[in-house]
Image 1 (cartoon, rainbow, N blue to C red):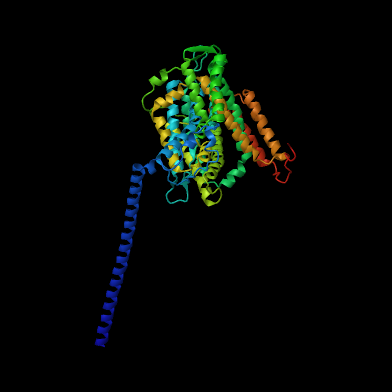
Image 2 (cartoon, rainbow, N blue to C red):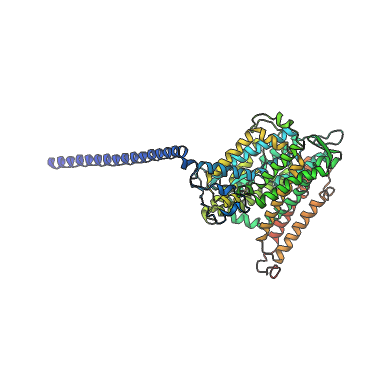
Length: 578
């Protein structure tokens, strides 16, 4: 019995020792695994440092083997003979590209978008009659916000412990939305007519920063609906807001804004409304004078000529180049007032000027609808960028890119609201640069984002845009708004032209065109003079929506599309039409 106990005790001791040895072995294996993993990380970091060193110290890293002459050769004989059958290389979204090419193409993306980026804050300043310093700050804040949002859109961040992202991970750029401008003009008209914005004794409208503070405060309350839209499947969004809605909105927006562009082309909206001279630099002509019309025409015709004979890089930057030519001519003829440029600080940033934030109930409905439309309208832009970048346009990965894109737009608008900028939305204007240059690399996009931020920080640049002679700016606007209308027609072109769809579009476009031509038709319908402030704000909100024709037209199309039975089985009415 005693020997058996000794034997069992010895067996237990040996088993315990074996267990310790096995634990020790597993610990050693884990240690070896961690050590090898650490070595792999160290090797990876060393390789990255070596590649980075090689990138900045070798000719191949700076220039590569790209034929830069292709970008700068004019599209006229005999210069274009060499590149007539040129097979340019393609760079994917994560491909490495030479430093010089990244800088050139980053600048190209920046120049392609800069006119539309600065046009929105300039129009907002025009709607609220801002002075040069206020407009300069608004342009700076918009450029900085656009650069930050573009950087986030291209980089694409994963939201911790969720399947969601912020950003598309494509060369998608973000900029201010033109949709806010129609609301701004209608809202400004209401506030000045009610006396809540200052008017001089001679009837001239004075700057109204309080109205812009109401915009910012109302944006903070309404932008969250776009955040929520980021979590809604795109197929549901497209069913509620199909191409008929977004196409109608773009087309009516172009028609609405073109009138404002023409007012600036003739010398400015203020002098058109109240008469007198339109002071531009050292000149003081009446609105629509031959001098102002000719000055705007110089900008417009320059854009046309550059698109006819310019090199590839010039064609994609034709709007800014046409604007530069118009600026040179106007400066030589004395149409510039440089006092705002001299008075501008050397640098500017968000939060350097304060606005009195408020929430205006009349803006809530209009801004809610605007943010919903922005969440929908960015989907075809992301699709176009994915196609241009040779990425999947369906499946889980693409759906994730759409979700991240909508979220990034919403957060960009949130940053704009707290920083004094304009609501943001994804842009597709740079897709032509991707197709033209064969470069979808995100490195070029990061360069463009940094350049936008620097343009906003160095406020002399934004002050130069703020000091643009209005006829020069108007000539560029008319062309730019024409491109928005073409984009709307392109979206509508994919709509099946059945009897149902033609009826819906006729209703929406009819109301939209009528509201654009006669904007005051709804003034007396909901006139209210009582003391109920809540009711007054609600009625003003409805009035603002109805008197903003592109929003009202889009609402009509959306409503009729939901209640009228689907006519997909109807024949296409365009069959046989030449």
